[in-house]
Image 1 (spheres, one colour):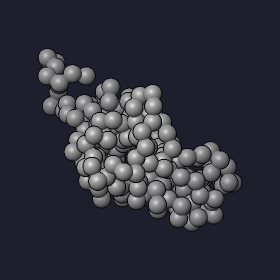
Image 2: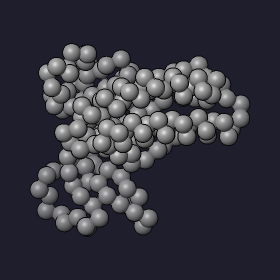
Image 3: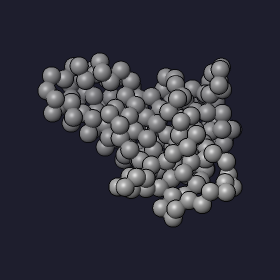
Length: 176
């Protein structure tokens, strides 16, 4: 997606640069296999969605959608540090969600990327989403703990860069 596109978007859609976040439960299938009751599994996921939403919104972000054991969220472009703080706090709180249901805690993993997306209500029902190459990039990022793209790392204040470790291939940084 290029800025300054000649295509005119409908009013319900806006092209912008944003901080994009994905979060998912590490080893979720194993975790859910510890729960025999289907309704109890759903309640665990509801607890997870609540935890994520509270932290994302407290950091100034917006949850766009829940997909099984993962969440897609959006922050303003310059709010990548707020996104990382929200992710760190939810990772610290997640074991309590597991223990509440009698589960052996796992972890959350998350990816953060900055890029151009089109945000708004899509389809006949106007489901809010963020679409574009940058969304594909954040969904394709992998790694333990929190993974940030080079674009995010470069926006971090120098004092916030010390816990991050560079990873090869497509350059990304990890904090486990």
